[in-house]
Length: 250
Image (cartoon, rainbow, N blue to C red):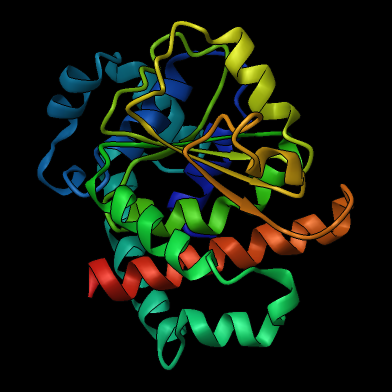
């Protein structure tokens, strides 16, 4: 079943311009749990988006009016929480690691997952940075965290309103590390020294202090093998989802 939140995230993550539709999707992500208590007037005022533009987006997704859109969003939220609860029964991070095989992760991965989830719990927002395909693999993690009330967005260079603060978590996903380097060079105005930054990569060089840019590095085996890295990303996202749900949501 294609939940409304999934459709909203699909539009948000695929946007190429900072228009009213993009800003409305972003507003939902940042106000997901509070949306229930807002009427049409509240949403328009707080998002600073004209009602006509909001209604136009609702119509685009085949809803006749805002109330119908909101009702479906709330209904789907209950469905998603039930889905998550059912999927998490009898699962823990150790079981996932054992199923994948110890060769995929080193002994520190459980500690890193714990630290990252704690940072996510405290964070005001989570920013994902990476190329198109790795980012598409993170959508399940993004959907779950938004469902739990944590704003998660994929970084877009066209969005000049994104601000990164010390209370945020930035997760870079790049087999070689190029995406992180490109981000650091272009966005020099961001001071990430006090921000929790995580790099998921196959490039062992970033684990050494002289090359290390991010605060934490989850280095997985492989020589920049895209197919293998995709499965590794999926596994790490699953570890984060399971640990966060069991530690901070239950």
